[in-house]
Every structure is written in C-alpha cells, then in structure tokens.
Amino acid sequence: MNKTIFLEIFGDSPILKVLDFLVVNEDFDYSMTDIAGNFEVGYSTLKLFWKKLEEKEIIVNTRVIGRAKMYKLNLINPVVKKFRNFYWETTKHQKLKRKGLTINN
Image (cartoon, rainbow, N blue to C red; front, side, top):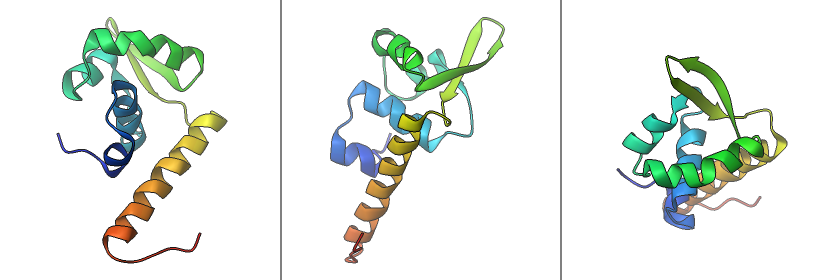
C-alpha cells in the first residue's frame, strides 16, 4: 500500500493509518475487520485505541450489518473538522512544494 503524503510526513503509526484512511474515505462506513484486514493495521492493535476514538466521538457507529458494526469519521465533531482541514492543507502544501510552487498562507 502506498503511503499518502500525510503519512510520509507524520509517520505511519496504526492510529494515523486509520485516521488517514477514514479521512480519505469519509463518504463510506467500514467495520473494524475491514479496516484491520485491508489497511495494514492488526485487529488487536486496532482494538487498543478504537474505544478511545469512539469515546472522544472521533468515529461514530453508523449501522449494524449482521454482527458487524460499521463506523465512519464523525464529520460534525469540531476536532475532526479541524483535523480534516489540517490533513488536506498539509497534503495540498506538499503537492505544491513538490511541483516547485509556493503558497503564502
């Protein structure tokens, strides 16, 4: 799996991988198994911080399919909004920098 610009800059710790994935794919919901199995984060590792993400309302449960709970980024949480802005501004800035352009903001 290729690293995103965000992960290249800030590292690819399991929690950053999950947040990176959820920001990029914010239109969809995923089960913990989906995230662990497809995005290079072990399920047991995911469980270590998943409850905290729920408690802080960074992620929200959207629905249940069979026994699988589906989750997505909580886009109404002010902290998540700021993180998303930071994520996309960082990505935009680095893309421009790689092209030899600069931004004054």
